Length: 372
Ligand SMILES: NC(=O)c1ccc[n+]([C@@H]2O[C@H](COP(=O)([O-])OP(=O)(O)OC[C@H]3O[C@@H](n4cnc5c(N)ncnc54)[C@H](O)[C@@H]3O)[C@@H](O)[C@H]2O)c1
Image 1 (cartoon, helix red, strand yellow):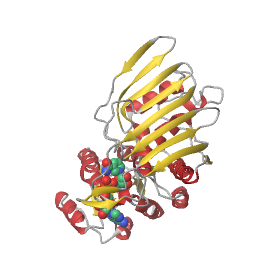
Image 2 (cartoon, helix red, strand yellow; image 1 turned 180 degrees about the vertical axis):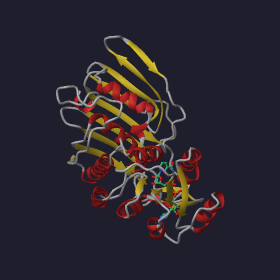
Image 3 (spheres, helix red, strand yellow; image 1 turned 90 degrees about the vertical axis):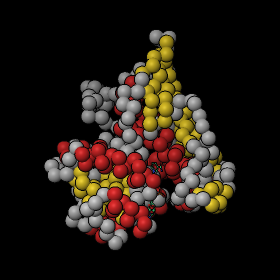
Image 4 (spheres, helix red, strand yellow; image 1 turned 90 degrees about the horizontal axis):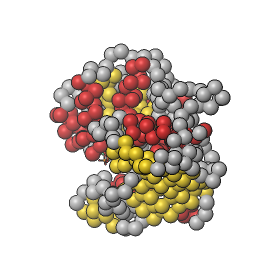
């Protein structure tokens, strides 16, 4: 990967809620820093494209995804569409040699995810897959603490993320949507980054609220909105993920990690952490670690992509990690349908943060929770 110096030119596919607020904010910040330029936008709803073009004077409005992806004035394609479009659009953009940021999940089927990975491997450029939870400063500190063995061997965990559910975008309640893909994916990415790959899954995944208000009218909900997923990481290490568009509010930690010598709890949500609390049995006291970057935005994968494109460094986040999370979610749905454990076979590389020592002299990565 060669480093780039000129501002990266961004093209965005999908101009809905995440573009309008969160991604626009980080694009504007990176623009002020002279590192990116928004050059092209497209949404299948012409009104959305026109509104964004009015807000960002000079931005091109190609006639469709093909024209945006093939544009010589686009270096990075952001795929911020509904989920069914993620895999095909990200694959097309990587095949055109563009850097790609794709929202979660990276695809809605294993076949699409595998095609994306194959095309990615065959072309120059970066692929950054949301969610970007492992990039947060708090996650890094937790990963480091667990990897150092501060709570002993990690053996058990509980994670939860949910809310009442979207009132926009009917697709959230159709095939290729659902709470597991939309919300559970955060917790799964978080836990797998700490435990390593899941080896088998048992789950209950259902539709608790069969009709929903969306875009101001009542629609049938034909996707999942309520899930409880049991994860077996092997070696008697277990976790569960509770997620749904069925959770009105909560005041408990997002993630609880239980080790043989202590406990670590992430406060807030894994996509918006608020620091962590740690109990070390030898110290017999709860230590509170306040959030160091309360304004860390969950869109930071874009900043990370720009950093890596500028420096030529590899990304910390790895597409294989996203692909594994997808396999786990599909296994969870299958487990729920068939009422049995479902094996998960894929692996993914351990997270390597540049400030971590690569090797402890015994062939083990220092600070890797998976090998501690
Ligand atoms: N809303 C959130 O809080 C949130 C947070 C994090 C991530 N995400 C993810 O971001 C993505 C978008 O979510 P959203 O809430 O913005 O949804 P949304 O429905 O508001 O926006 C999606 C947009 O994509 C457009 N679109 C669909 N097919 C397209 C195509 N082929 N080409 C171009 N545009 C197309 C739709 O017209 C729509 O405007 C989803 O994958 C979601 O999981 C959402």
